[in-house]
Length: 182
Image (cartoon, rainbow, N blue to C red; front, side):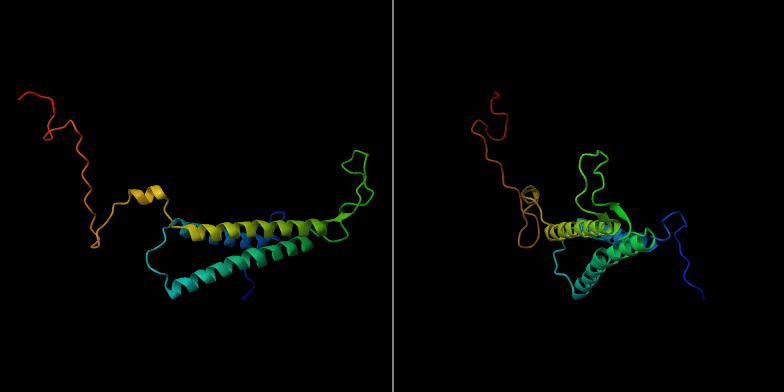
């Protein structure tokens, strides 16, 4: 029995970035499921133990993908395939800034620093998404005041109550037209 076949085609960077691509794909599927569950109304009954545990495992899996696997695999990809290390520079000290010849760069920036800045951006995006999803999950199922006002009132037996009769205007008599000769 040989190693597992790599399902990603051998184009330019796709195969070396395979683990990053698979992790992002799994995260997108998990987030799609979470957003679908957020659109459903909150049930009236309390959650069971099994529902809470499956939700906790799902959240743990998404956080592991977002905060551990994707940044780590991106660092591995940029180190091994892109070869972004401390020997490759974006710009160096005293190099002409923006090609204008007016000002020089006061410091050097290597590609490893760029890699780290990208990873910090990945963490920032996932943290913002995490905060949004926690807030949206807590707010799911809350109706606005207009939707609550439109719901018919029910009796203690669960049947809808009758609507109250509209007050009769002063000019109307016996429900007729009010002005005809008979």
